[in-house]
Image (cartoon, rainbow, N blue to C red; front, side, top):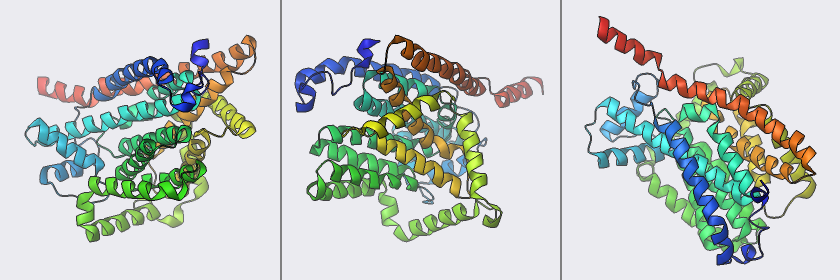
Length: 401
């Protein structure tokens, strides 16, 4: 375990100078971990996603947009255009069930990239142990497994946020143009997943000015962000009036709760609902790790860490979701992924504190309890897709009626 305790910045002085020796030393672990996480998340997210496209009320409309090539612009176009491209490359017939399967596959790929991006961000923030734990916590998150099986936009936005957090970590280590372009690409991808993803922009700009890039890097960042966003959403740019009308319609749904009168809504009620969903989708012992991480950060305030940005973004997004009438469990996905990152970094830092007795009580026992709670919950969600009662009923009807 001691080997896992090393922070990338603490191994050798060559890390700070970008030395080749340091990068090669850490590359085998990081590549191996990413390969394992990709295989594990692929197994969880890509399997058992061929159920009927009518099971979710939003999927038939998305299927129609792929079949016709038209867009309603209720959301940015990253997910739909990626599905359209994948479907065109596959050469399959545009039958509704095949279209929705391809869309769910694309969504699952975004979810896999989400796991990899957040784990990489944890690695460059607090080292190997943090990356390992972040990947484990994400794979044991029931909501991530569930949303990855549907043709929905949330994993696309969360992937962009994960790439943004990774870029923040890298840029804070070395404020190079390469890391700047990754930061811009992450922000553009997040905003191209859902309009809410644009909320990451202030955190990206804060990173630019904090690390001394300032005005020198501001123009390239904004130019590349706008360029990538326009490229990914060229139809929205070409039909700007229709896109603006769709956005206004979505804002109206947010204000009314999708048909529920806003006068019947209380932010405290929203906070209670999302808090219950949050606890349902996360293991309670992770709060101990997250709390320790926040306390440790407030006490030390390390100069080069994205921990504070991720923690603050996660908290503000949670409060924002609770304050609006429109609600759905899947909206919590980026909050839960951010929480897994914060808990993993907190656990890694807790491991470094004190002797073996403290590590056993403060680290090993809560970690064992967290995984003992989270893994059965995640398995229950996966089993629900594997042993889909709707498919079993359809087979029984076919065989007996």
